[in-house]
Image (cartoon, rainbow, N blue to C red):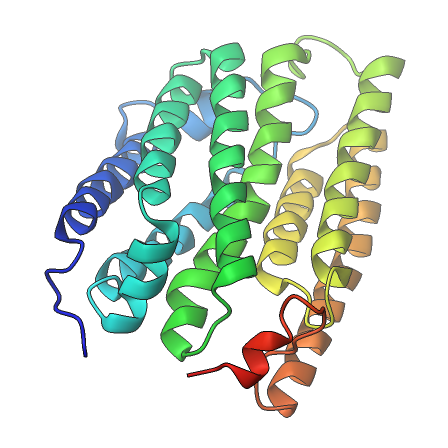
Length: 272
């Protein structure tokens, strides 16, 4: 029997309220009297301000998620699957943005880790137990949380350098700064590759989020070592994006989701 749109109405309403709280926290960073993206501590991994435009895409997609939760398919994933995790993520993210915008970088770093953990939990639930069965699942569940997951990986690195790194305007890049910058870029590119090569189809949105950020860092940084190292890792990460595009094309040529491991196999015969 088809469910009613009022099923799980408490979670749905909370999701709506938290979404607009989350949205408002990011609007504040744009509408504030001073330009927050230019007023934050500039480190040797700070990207160009246009990197943060990715928030706009995430918000638009999550607005679709909020609407999609009122459908039968959406309720199955968003309400029954993700459940209260979405509200928790929105609250944590709003607190993180406020702390970051007010330059409380050490506490913001702690909340960046909490946001990353919350997104990772949702990402795991969605990828493990709710494989996309409709276009709505793809666009309003898998796409936003894949993009979000990749982006929060970047935010953890950016906030860590703001919390514990030197100010690029007042301190030249020493040997240890360059070492940690290199390791940060290596980690980001490795994560992008893990997204792309973790399965046959890969995770294209997450790889794109990291690659986009690496190019933004390349564009913003002028210290020669940081500038060119960012470009090298951005190009390497681009290869992961290309692999993700290829995996996606293979997936759609085969007419659906590629199920690879034994845990997924029973779903082939038991689909509804």
